[in-house]
Length: 182
Image (cartoon, one colour):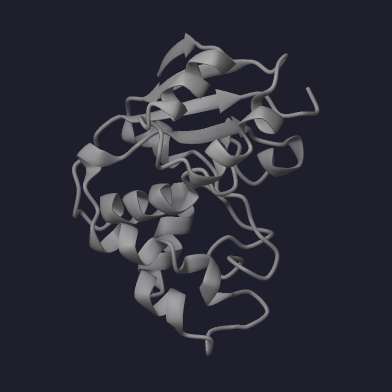
């Protein structure tokens, strides 16, 4: 994995230039989320296994059907659950008949247009932070977790496409920032 230290100013400049426009939530709260003294780095996940070990954060009663509390949260495991259960993003986004305690179609709706128009060459950077200690026992090989709303849906679609053999892996860029607790 490649790493390069960056600054708040560089990220802000790229956002203003529109180069990071796909980072929907990242752009809205950039000052609050990245204000100094947070450590910022550019990462490049150069191997498929590095990318698939990134974890997805479970969201209570929204995505637990694929990101269970007591199972692995790695992109690989989540994508395998989708594949093994025969789910499509269209089905997850529209069928309230799936377990309502673990699933809200609304969480999956952003995945549908991403899946329909997926182009790995247009995959913009995702945002990752450190995996919290309480989740490391579920995913001992993981170091990073996706930040809410900053690439979770795109990363999940990409992981599913990779495991279904619909894509060849291309390196994924990410912006890493230290969590507030550090």
